[in-house]
Amino acid sequence: MFHVKQSPISAPEKCLLCDNKELTKHLELKDYFLTEEAFHIYHCPACSIMFTWPKPESHELPAYYRSKDYISHSNKKSDLQSRVYQFIRNYTLRQKIRLIRRFTKGNMILDIGCATGEFLNQCKKRGYTTTGVEPDEQARGYAAGVHGLNVTEPGELNNIPPLTFDVITLWHVLEHVEDPDERMEQIYRLLKPGGYVFIALPNHASNDASHYGKYWAAWDVPRHLFHYDRNSLKFLAEKHQFEISDIRPMLFDSYYISLLSEKYMNHSLCFIRAAYRGFVSNFMAGMGNNEYSSLIYILRKPGAKIKAADAV
Image 1 (cartoon, rainbow, N blue to C red):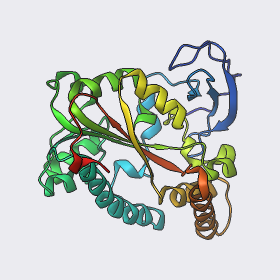
Image 2 (cartoon, rainbow, N blue to C red):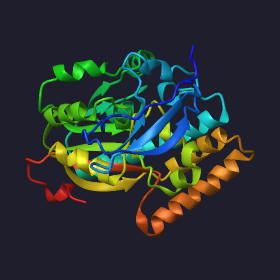
Image 3 (cartoon, rainbow, N blue to C red):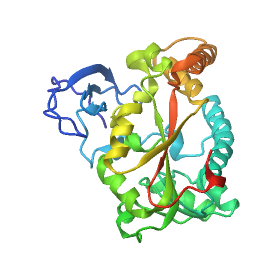
């Protein structure tokens, strides 16, 4: 059982990504999804990252995911919100595979944070050799039992031989990772030279983030430990010797995030409001700044030459 934090939240001593000690508080908000606990979001001007504070201890984090409404760990279809999520997910699965095929012909793929394995299952049907990593035991069991996938715990990443994969994907996962540096080191070790990493992340520079402020659902504290924009992801990628090959929008995310945000604000006509705000956010991004609600960062590990057939 959760208890709302009542004591004042002291400031962090340094950035959780680059150790810079000059930080600014960006926002005060709550865990509107589950616990109503208070958290702060701090910004580091040195690396541009934002992070959730206080950061829960490792043993505390699983409890923040234990909800029947945490859709990515289930295949719940009993309410309208879940059905909307399932419809969007099924469409975007095909788009993700199409995007991957534009960049690489390799068939060895690792999906970190694979949840119930829907993406990997589609990859398997298309001839990929798949491996999944998922911390949630129930979701991991579903992926293995229903889809017959090879899914392991995050701790097993260090036991996989180096240079195994052509493609590694993290679909809205890196923001949950406690130690991004460690994860990027693992990815670099596991990826073949010339291989690609696809990282989907919420974008707090988007119009919907600005509109909803502390109620923007993609803050999702404390499940989202880090909050990235183009500059902070570039900092992390270059720190670990990756090249950014491209950045692509996830157009449906603005609608879904807006729907959750409207619910957190207890607004009536949530679907209508969310449809309007999602459209506005995408329209503003498309008019020039390209700051969509979520972005896919496509990183390349240097080493092998880029084939003309793989170039975009």
